[in-house]
Amino acid sequence: MLSYEHAYHIGNPADVLKHWVLSLCLQHLNRKPREWTYFDTHAGEGLYHLDDERTQRLGEWQQGVGKLSPELRQQPEFAAYIRALEAVTDTWPPQTLPGSPVIAAGESRAQDSLVLCERHPRALGALRRQLGRHPRVSIHERDGYEGILSQLPPASGRGLVLIDPSYELASDYERIPQWLNKAVQRWRQMMVAVWYPCLHHEPHLAMVRAIQGLCSPEGKPLSWLKVECHLKAPPERGLLGAGMMVVNPPWGLLEQLQAGAHRLAQDLALEVTLHHSEND
Image (tube, rainbow, N blue to C red):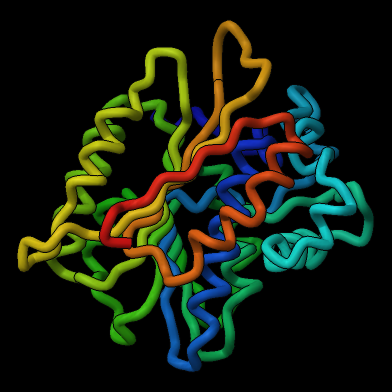
């Protein structure tokens, strides 16, 4: 099923959460000079314009990026995320928003590389126009789970995998922890960020529990961090909020999220919760 297009939802509160956490993870990778590889299982278009009729139809960005306050934009925990936004726009509120691969490309250095998978025809074409000429970006028209797994581990042994499907297919909730269990056997140190929606019937709960139970090839429980945001005035139907789980989170990420969560909650009228593994 290839009907989902992220342009309808770009910049909403769930998107802000995802890209904030992603930017912090990339920032941590850049603290060491050794190269890293960014893998994206569902890369999307790369760049989104707010005058696109799809984006205008729902206008969800107005409840997300459009509500970020000057106070938040000055807070150090959001510096990398705001830098990513400002890199693609000359105005505030912004008129152009970066997707995950553009954020990763912006944080990458000369020695780093990106591996992007996308199957939606329109998104794939836009992604190739945006990043196809980048010397260290490879774009693949294939199933992201299979495509990324076949390339693990990267030669550098450092990097990040972003798993961000639309969840139009209910099987994603089962497939993701199964994929992670296979992937960690190949790459014990892999850092993985999994975005998921929070819905009324709570299909994400079993997936989250399964991820929390992941173990290394030696049988040692993996560390994880979970941050969720929930709308204070949720709709009767549709998205109630969203979450990000980071497996093998970098040291210091939890403290950054704790420091920024209150400001994010204030700006976007959210309830933000944080949980982490005992071995974190």
